[in-house]
Length: 411
Image 1: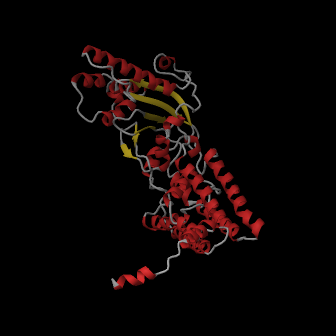
Image 2: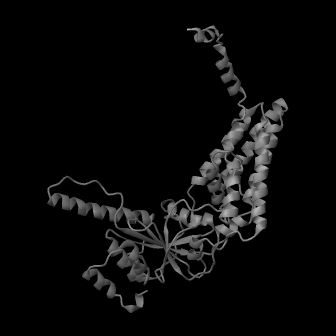
């Protein structure tokens, strides 16, 4: 019982925790410096979205220090700044059938966001009357979306008919079926283009708001430290996004190609996006390889290393701020909201410097029928997609259909 006496006699102060919480929420200490170490992957993706010109408006936010350190490892160990694509797909050379796994951020995002831009591209003038009879839908509003709805409805009717014949309950409408092959023609592309759309403008607006918030404690209390840290963070962020190496990696490809390409997620995908180079477009095989623009000199690595050191110094400086820290947290909060929005935003091919024009769409509720229709309209294109969607041997009827196209369409 004796060892418990000191504990029982200890004086407890029930107000101590309350005062600690009050102090912390009045002027949070060291919170901003900790938050600077979180969310580096968000900053990297936001940069990948907007880099290309001298001004890359990725706002100063939480996560920049973490990103700066990982950028050093990526530049020295991986010889690149651009992050790996966060959406997998395949790039098919429709002339020789060669299939390449994509390693380009641009192509990955174009395929990921396809449903947001598929019907917003300008329509090409198609003078081929034969193609306008069945598959050309260039004069229809939302032609790709409508085509997918049509083939899903056709497939659903077949499912309901079979269910009635078997005496089963009516099935639900399937989310996807068959294959839709929209065809686009490349227009003159432009490298070093950050895309002056809403994500880009949001970055500029956020930077101005951050400066306004940081100036409030300076004007009210004469505390200029928050404004200084914010301005320094913005300068480092803009310098980080202005490194020329970004553009070399983002558009590491030749131009003016005559090749035709197909972009798809693979077997089971609803879409196979056909893009005709038309003598002006990017070589998407080069872009998918993404090995042309790797860092080959030490100056670029040295710049990334120096920036990482400066970010660490900024982290140390920010940890010393003890007054009016809510304003600093507000600055970082605005920045991370903008970074998160940009990192996940859907963008059109034109925003990535790759403008396209819509030609037509071929859609069938049977995948084989869609590939045959594509081959009939665009020799070699349908055949180049055949191994992706039909890995097994074809039956006799299917083999005969493909042989009927003759040697001229063979790869």
